Image (cartoon, rainbow, N blue to C red; front, side, top):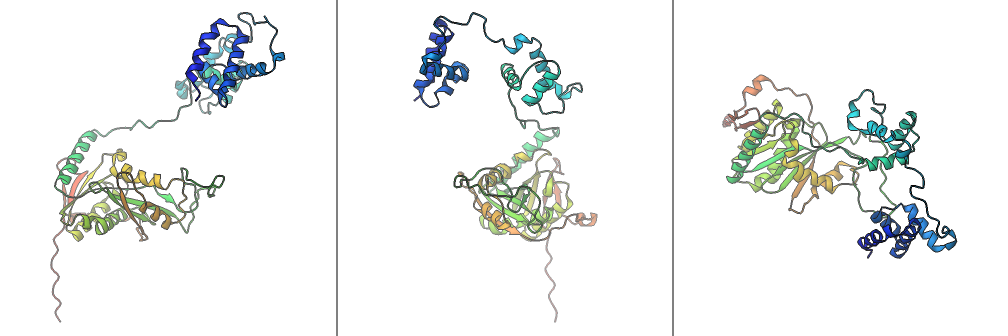
Length: 410
């Protein structure tokens, strides 16, 4: 096994005591002894140029290529560094790449990709003789590196954000302590159906990647899929309806209805109250009248009190369904084109996690027209109780009493 620490220690001990030629030979000898990968390892631990190491190896193998004995570069000899020949170069480069220039209307590269070649071209335009390679070395010395964006800013926070989180958490804990079901719901990102590229990689025979379409244009006869997830917090089980029409409040509540009939009711036969945690927007948004109307219908059908707690605006990433269900689905089907709705349903149904997640899925081909309006009169028929704390986010729909049907008189 290559001992990089020993290579570094030997070089640091010998380098001050020998001249440039012998140092080059030492580097070459270390690389040869190290074997495959030795040149890269020696360059990494000593800081020497790979070209210098290669030259040392060549001189070891061919004595005729070595310089005459006693010929050593005088102190200060050799080609000068670019910043020594051009003292203003580093400051000019720093002004081009310094982050505040993004908002500087006078910056010549304000709207341009700051690649090494673009930076070098601008510096040459300013009178600095420099190549893109030298620019790269200078940026490294100045502490610059390629940096991706990082999602850390959450934007403007609602003033009651933390209070709503505390209210929601207390409601969930109380519901679970009473043995009543709690579900987290949301719509996963819509997916194009067809032989389209899907992010990630899958094991396949070497040199035989699955071929997909070059452009992501909707195939009319296949359309898009809208997976709506219902995650049972206590049971670690989930239902996903794969819709083929619009993602509306009616579709969202129908997905909850299907979960209750297939998974929820068998698991919670004595339940009297269902608590739903949902995002503030989308097909289950707190402003949607249709969402409340459809939940009222579900309460009437099941006899359940349906409580709803919405997450504060802009905090959907905290919804349990996101990281306990949707992330597992995305991981499971990575690198696999979603060529049909049936494939999507099968992949979702096969999703598992190390924590024992169980998922069932089915296709929903019903029509859910968009733009359905709910009148004031219809809203007046709802048995809706609003909480004292932010009643627009926290409310309960009570089942309406059913009158017995009048007997048929023949």
